[in-house]
Length: 515
Image (cartoon, rainbow, N blue to C red; front, top):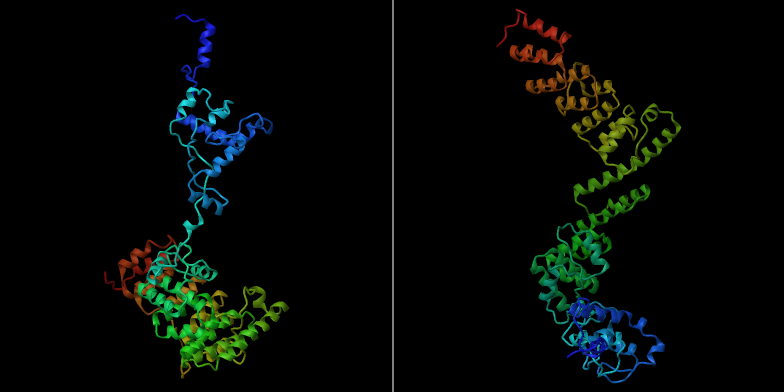
């Protein structure tokens, strides 16, 4: 058959089939892109004026409204009836739902090609669009119900197991407690409601299940719930016979600083000594020195043990003296009349400092004061019964820091009943040498105290370490150790007085060397 060129063009344009070209996008991916472009740009493509010229049909081909209305109906009718119920309860979308395939030959491709009447010829891409293809609607979110823990049917053991997995109730008190946990485990804060346990029997059963689990975090979580939902009397009564849970509650109250409830608990348990200690601990929250002193005065009569009572009395006396010393020294420092305050200004207040720090401060600034003054080191030693070793160690550090070597010497000099003087160190002269060297004492001072070390090996080690050459040479001479003296000769400077002294000893015929 011979056809003219015009007939050929009419055939290809009128037939429902088209000639194959590489430009055709008739695969599934092109259909997906085409559908997405249709949903996103249909409102821009269809104007209000154009809608009057179009036949309004539904997905089944029935004329029920405009094209825009049809597309909105497509998004509204997508999914199952269960998904539509979820859509009513949510305003956001998070998952994809598949659109139902139209029942007629009406497709989105026909909208773009301007053919709106059913029964018209389809293109090749239209024919291929009848094959199953995925269509996508706006993203639908998961319902809130999927995130909830439906705990109405949980038993106490089930609840405790979930608590052990880290699903704790989200409350301010739980978060405050979790911030104080010293544990390497990471708690996953999720909703795990304990509110369904309303009766006392259920709550106690929940607590016993937590205790049997042997998990401290779970026990504390349940105790927080009981603390919030039970009266103090009932809670204390039930915990009195459950010592494990009681210890956890006491520790928890100490961690969060709930002193009021802790005191009530100790009163209920008749633990008078622990009650007194908890009351005494409240002084840490008082910043004003005068108010803290008055509070400590009220603690003196509490039922402490004999040893603790003495400590409370000393604490009150020490703070009372610190207040007096601080006021007097602040006045002297501002006046600038005392040399030690001018050369060594104070770096911090003495208030609320420990006893040893107060003694060091007194030895540094008030060492020469008479025993009758509150700031005298000797007065502090006698008042608080400071041991000799502690007093000597503290006074040595303070006076050596000031490089007051005369005071250091007097600190170790004692007299017997015949009037003879002797140096004695309760802490040992080897420690005296180390403290003096730490404070950059001159070699002459170091040598004097190295010579007072009784143990020969310790003396040689210290003398060698701190380069006290005369002490090493004299010790080797006394030991008649020629080899050690020869070895030490290489450590001194050539041509120095120490080298000449060693040579003189080695060449002396009066010394009978051992080696």
